[in-house]
Length: 334
Image 1 (cartoon, rainbow, N blue to C red):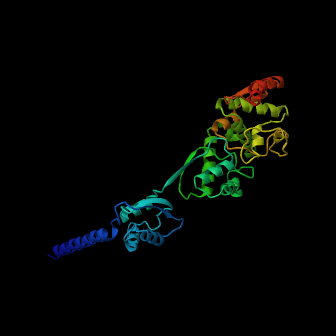
Image 2: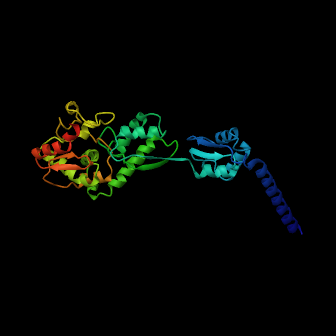
């Protein structure tokens, strides 16, 4: 009889507790509206449950700070709310909001970095997307000494190693993490080139420099191995690279056409005045250009020029090159 009474007591207590929970959930945990109000709710790094609850309450997205904190602790999620920007509306219950914050279903943003973009151009893309406020934030992050040492980049900046692609990141993603993400993507793609695995950082750096020049010079992928071969042939016979792209790199924004005086600018990046490789990459190349630097095509060609359709005319001799220049370039400016 006593056992039966205990069971009845326990069941009754559970019913009372469950009933109280339902009543509390209905009164304090239900939504505050019908979806007429929506906001981008920002959870800052390290922001605690109390602060999150206060902001949600002040924005009329929850009915009770106490109930929000109680449910977070009851479900064991005290330290599991993730930073980021969330789209929350007033039709969501407290439990649904908590689940969203714990699952990390943050608002995402995508940005695309075209092949051959410089670090300056990447910074401008991030500014345009409101990911950072100023270009220099990205430039500083891409020049961080610890990052360069981590990835064994023998240069003052990670330019050339920031892989051009479309990325999707949460809002408020730190610029340092963007740089790290792009570097990881570079090495992941580089790993598909078997010849790259045995190179020292210095040897790899030369390949990246060459790829960065080829990327800016040859827009047609099928021409990139041939162009890489031309530059290496010039290097072999101690002829300057004479790459217009290296001169264009000196300007904040590329010129439509370089003038003779531009080719006389004194800079280690001016490969009309200096033999050998420039000090560093002049762009961030894609995989085809990187592959071309490892697998150049040998030919008799020593010169090239761009034709109106974007392809290049390759010449064996300087005389042939001058004839091609008359045919494809000079006529455009007569």
